[in-house]
Length: 596
Ligand SMILES: Nc1ncnc2c1ncn2[C@@H]1O[C@H](COP(=O)(O)OP(=O)(O)OP(=O)(O)O)[C@@H](O)[C@H]1O
Image (cartoon, rainbow, N blue to C red; front, side):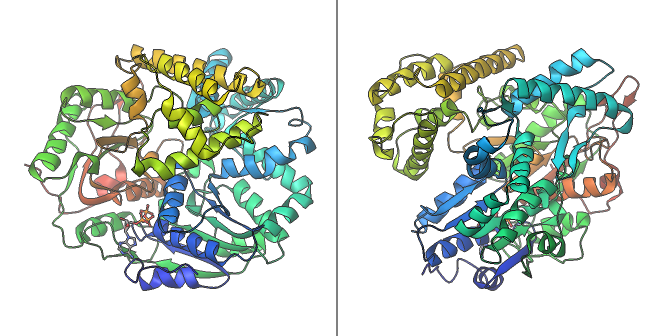
């Protein structure tokens, strides 16, 4: 059985991992949810008694899935019976692809379009439909009872008409977007009970990370599978209701009782309340935005750190970049924090790509990763994206586990594309990739030359598979479009191969991210701006106070040492107004520090 070092886990984490049956674990920020989940998966893998069984873990992002799987492999546990990935990948791999023939709209084949294609289609339809519709008005999600449109009431009829046209166009092109993946998966599970019965008999344990951002339709799909297992499949559900920041897109923290009723599983409820990430002062501060009664205590190595926490509601938006630069210098140059431990966070409604580029220009000695720095769509389902990850990374011992897994994914995608992969192993695939090269300095041309050389090395004709051809066109067209847009926005060097490589580099520089993008991450210093009513919370939110609390809770709990909050002055809102600071932040009394 899998054993761990005594100091890897605390007593509550061990209790949750060793608890027999199903567990519903509510845990505060920095309490080691990821670590607990990782060790739980490792333990469950080691307890499997049949090679037919699978452990299934649903994570919120591909990055989290990669990190957890790598960690388990480093712990020396065989992951061949683990399936880990996002709910969308889960639905695609376990439900849509194997059972597409049972759905009239999928049975003739389908292609998944990425978030950028969706946004572009919405953009075009908005300009066609007029009436002041904007892309963000098109936000919608499916539930087991139909679709929900997230925009204000007065626009709903127009958005409904727009979406009906959008879906009709996708159906005509045999395309499926991310939301439709969930809807189709739900329909298949609902209409063909044998799918759940089969999956329920294979899955020994189903683990769900970040349940607080899970949608009703996702709970319904997983619930149906667990129920069909007749009590054989266990569940391990982990999350933090305080960090539920996808409410406007249908995410919510289900109660253990409600999920029990849905899945037929009876849970032992447990919690984790020690924060290993942040100082006492940071924990005390983010507790201001805690909406639950649980008390959190700091227990990690920075517990006693004398954190600087500042709040600035006077910097004008025209001086914002200078102020952020000043705070970066303070943290890196005066406090000795390394740049990769600094994160700049803003609401997704602001042009963060512009902020990243201005910081790049103002601090030429620093490196940054952020939006507007990625020249191609991170379309995880696209074959050529999968292959790019291997081509653009170095063959180094540190990256071996990761690249080997990516190679496995490329082989699986080749299989799916109808290519005979009997003679291809992960090793031979990596060898073929490591020998392909090109002298091109233009990133896209470089990749395309490497693709050809790679397929030559494997002795495969890449035009022999319609799927590969379709994915190739989507990848090239999407990347060209993206590069053109980024260059027009001022990212002049974006097309260079060095920028392509940077996408998969280990994090070395300062991170610029949306608030939603830093979920699950941690940094020594966090600098957040755009903390303005109408953005944090967004004006579309129903319960603005709750939404603002959760966003601030997530932002502030990312910080290990220092935290700087900015509600800049003078950001225009419509024709005649300017944004005001987030109400609950302004109302929060705290002994803030002045940053010299
Ligand atoms: N038992 C432990 N002892 C020491 N450090 C720990 C322990 N458990 C977790 N940690 C550390 O605490 C930090 C936070 O852990 P982790 O990222 O898993 O938290 P989390 O609960 O997922 O946080 P969040 O919900 O805020 O994203 C990490 O740096 C992790 O290595």
